[in-house]
Image 1 (cartoon, rainbow, N blue to C red):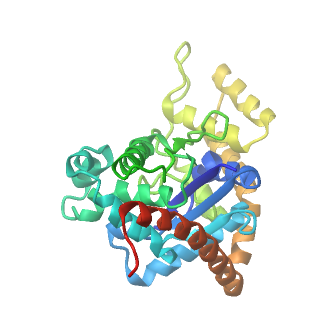
Image 2: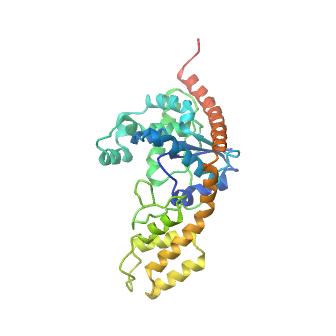
Image 3: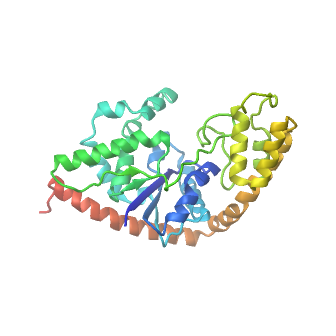
Length: 328
């Protein structure tokens, strides 16, 4: 059975784009693949999260994964820092990663531009830690967005380089995975780009209805339809989100109004707000129940840790043998 791995940083909440773009597909496929889902708390350290918030962020993401439908019995759901084998592999891969190739990554260039006062070594070697996350389970497939494709290609480079250097076949070369269908890019509410936490343009998976209505009603629009002109990006974005959460007849109704030039953007936003709320309410209710159950979360984390470490130890045994480590 092929292994699929995916993770998310523990720096906040999952947003609706995370769910529509990937999570609901994970729920569908977790019984058909050997799936690993993890909370990347080590990655989040590059931004120096406050210790008082650190564990709470991990807890929230864990509860949201479960509320979204991830089954900890069918798949492996774990916290990255619970698996020390990852950090050992990270160290070993750093020995075959070259400074020049890491400095050329687009994400590193973007980060040093955006946070010139915090250019730490973790930012430079971020792709190596990501490679360790993937290779520790000898993963075959990794669902990644466009912004992570370069990191996945580096993972393939490191896997190939390790195998060639040590004359072994420890690591498969993982490939991007799109669930066998066209990837969904969920736009943000600011009129351009994709929905994301860092952009501040998203609606979170467990956000309360009042906040959702406020965000949607303040979404960017334009001055109205112009005959003969294509739909502007901000309005197209609202229709894209509507198509993902509303009934087809609702989408058709507003498309017809737009085409006729009679659409009222306020009405469109009100409808979109209620459809998003209806879509997210079951997930939010499950989350509130799960997040308050400390015993259940503890059991899930412990189960995931044990399953992840069993897989990771098997890989690391092969890696240490290939490198030449031997016990006295």
